[in-house]
Amino acid sequence: MDYIVINGQKPLNGTVNISGAKNAAVAILPAAIASNGICVIDNLPQIEDVTTLITAMESFGAQCTLTAPDTLVVDARGVNSWTLDDKLAKNMRASYYFMGALLGKFKEAVVPLPGGCDFGSRPIDYHLKGFIALGATCVQEHGAVKIKADKLRGANIYLDCPSVGATINIMIAAVFAEGTTIIENAAKEPHVVDTANFLNKLGAKIGGAGTNTIRITGVSALGGGEYTVIPDPIETGTYMIAAAITGGDVTVENIIPKHMDSVTAKLREMGCAITEGGDWIRIQSDSTLRPCEIKTAYYPGFPTDLQPQMATLLCRANGTSTITENIFEQRFRYIGELKRLGAQLKVEGRMAVTEGDCEFTGTRVIASDLRAGAALVIAGLCAKGETIIGGVHHLDRGYEKFEEKFRTLGADIKRIQRDG
Image 1 (cartoon, rainbow, N blue to C red):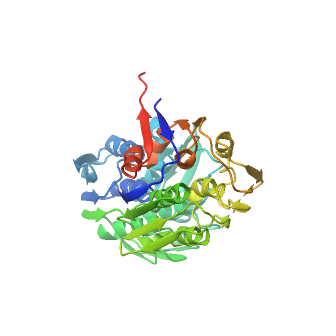
Image 2: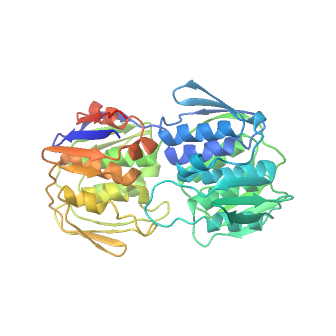
Image 3: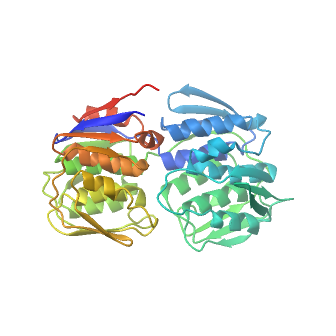
């Protein structure tokens, strides 16, 4: 497999353009196959998860054409299958969104249990409870979920926790349910709103996305339309944190600053100077960082997808910091590799503690998942000497042109490709 080589201790400076949001794109693409028309989706990130989803969509009978590197035309009128291939499902977590799309369109879906990054149990119980409330039957056998309904009926659905995946999946299916569906305690993440806006562009009637309560009035069919995916807040946060740890001066462009409020607040608390514009944020750091406390939470709280990157930064702060992971119980798995670079982190259940003032030193490490890989890159950027990172296929799943963008900011980073 490929690996990344970084020679660290070079401040990042310059401007970086942020790509479309991975977490929005991987929900919008499955939702597109529920259409009976032609969809044009702009600002798609050029990442492996998108490539995998396009292959899956084509396996259902959709015609997918890239008219530009970040623009996909989806003709879903030829979709004639509701069964997803097992190999495609195992490559990524977001394959479960096909459940809602196929159930809505055909009243039937057969989707293998999803794969994706491994950082703890992520059951789909809330998804299935939502489908059952809409009138479907759900059976798990031979590693797949089989869902079927004579027809879907609107229902009041309360989520025990504001699961992003369940909110989106139920919302997609409920678009086709007779009557009105109300989802209470719904997730409020930006990509929930983006998926709702996309569906509305196709003719759905969804209100309240971005609040605790989403109301969906069913329609008989969805048409086509053109839609632009929002910028990626996790990619944005990754470059902001990288600028902070290297003592850099970086402007991230093509973003929605409001989506970054929780991250911006913590970086300011740590001593970084941050300036915001209409679609950009500039972060300046002199590497003198104050400690702080991080607790991951559902939006608008601090995102779990930036927890590993932020933990890496806190290792460099001058004093004791704590990181509490409230979303995924095993998301600290990356810490063992971070310690190989010199991190001083102690894990106690769902909390990690660092005394700070860590000096990272380059060595060989392996990324265990997407955001863990980003954390190791960030550590390598400020480490003394050479850092070699394996498992970079995880990074390809969620970051577009990762090394190239860092090089434009002055990082000494390159990818070594291995044959075979």
